[in-house]
Image: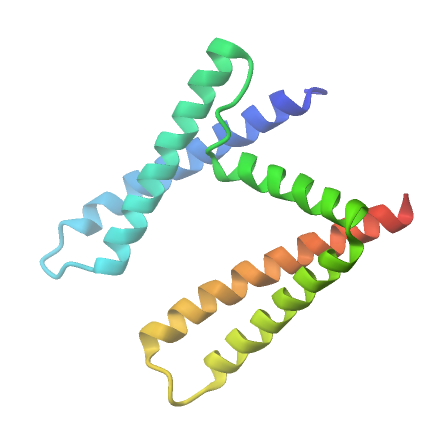
Amino acid sequence: MDSPLVRTADAIFTDSVNLGRWLRETEPRLYEREIDTALAAEFVEKSIRMELCHEELRTFSETGSFKGRHPFITQRSERERVTALLKEDPVEFTREMHRIEMNISRYSSHLNSQKIAPEKKKLAAANLDKFKATLAMYEEILKDVING
């Protein structure tokens, strides 16, 4: 398991197993009388992600490389892009990081606002989580580059 490609394949396989378990447990709930559109949407998203897992693993098995469409792989390439940006253009890196911090502030205020509809609050919460994870990645990259 020293190879980064094998570690990535293992992570994708584990993701596939977890998604399969979730889909099997959730499917009976889809056939209840009242249709839960949020659950149905999540079911479709996870089904698509599971197909991406299978596609990536099949391609890796056949060619020894990935297609690069699974989120684990795209996140790694985003990390590489941000690391390169920090090294090549630190000013733009800090601008992007500042925009992320501003988005976190904006979505936090949406969650605290009484004027925003519950559906929009759910969307704001999802965006807040996404931007917090992105900020954590930026901070980690910054620390890695500073610490050498």
